[in-house]
Amino acid sequence: MSKKEVLISSLILFLLLSFARGQEEKGFPFPIEQYKLKNGLQVILSEDYYLPLVSIVVAYNVGSIHEKPGKEGLAYLLENLMFQGSMNIGRMQHISFIQRIGGELNAATTENKTIFYQTVPSNQLALVLWLESDRMKSLEINTSNVERMKEALIEEIRHRKATDLYLESSIFFDQLLFPNFTHSHPVFGNEASLREITEEDVRIFYSTYYRPNNAVLSITGNIDKKKTLQLIRKYFETIPKGKEITPLPLVKFPEKKSIVNTHQDSLASLPAFFLGYRIAAPYSDDYYPLRIIDYILLHGKTSRLYKRLIKKERIAFDLSGGIEERRELAAFKIFIINSNEIMMERSKKAIFSEINKLKTTLISEKELKKSKNMFKMDYINQYSTYMERSIFLAEEYMAKNNLENFPKELERYLAVTPAEIIGLMNRYFTPKNILLNVKIK
Image (cartoon, rainbow, N blue to C red; front, side, top):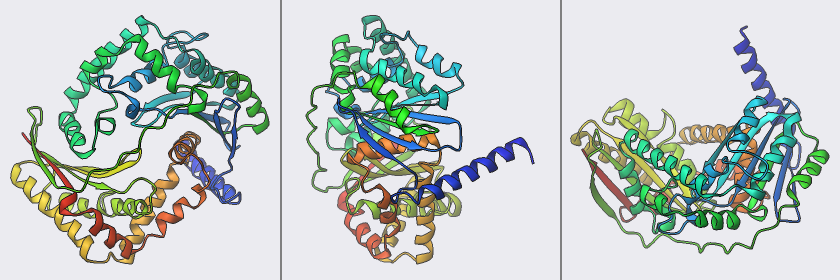
């Protein structure tokens, strides 16, 4: 057996043992403990001793939905500024510290959260906590750093447009699909808005949202809970609590109304179209069956749309999509690239045909079980490694403000019935609820 095969076998055994052991504890598939510091920092710990590693995630409850008009891209700008130095750490030193000890790190900003994560040898936990706490407490914000990063992000946007020929149309479609500026503008902003962001804008945004009472610290791996909690208190508890953040008002989709819009895009190399349906809010009762519908229609090479459009009729050049969440809103999106406009029309008819089948005919137990099994595999894979588990726990907590219902979450998806599917198909996948954006070469 090769070294690669041995490593893969060891990892599979590790995951199976971790999953089996964790099932015994409080209904969770792995052990967790939660704490809250005096300054409001939420702490989640998950011990696992099978590898000498630890994954640390710091997640902030802030994203593009917190930006004001004319300041698009501010959250993404701040994510990048978090690597430009703080009181005790020089520019880009955070990255070099982690790489020097053989660790890995990254960061991500979405519509409603900003996450920083790293995996390091378990004996380097204190180093990561020091690095994260230092930039939470004393990020270096100055004109030089801000202007340098603005130029870098503007160049990134130009590169995105040059390499993603359907980017502009995707942004245009989101503006049709989502009801307001807050939910519809892209996370990375645009060139004009980035140029308008000032050093003072950055300072206010940072002091408002990058505070311990607006953050979750999630740690998974080979840790001693008592010593880890002592380290967390040492590095984080002295950071002042920020002002209470006024929650953004909840937004609802407008009354159902069909929208068909033709958008010409000179960059598009082939004809393509976006198709969207506004659906139930994340984690509402209707949302669980809708996630399974997503798998029936779109996920994998055995999904209905892939089999028909790509394998059987070969009328689509590319197919992608699925459910997209933006805080309290969710939408079902489909994107199709075709070789010509005739194939584009045939693709539309095929999609509507498959949707109508699900609206009128109960899905077989065999097909439903297959889709549920695929969903279950993907769901469990969200926490199959230390890094993924830390991210998963932080995101779950921020989405629901607790982890109380998590042990039964998967059961809710797997309990979906054929009758629920046919009912929700007729409720949400209606002609009045469709948004269609046709792109023409």
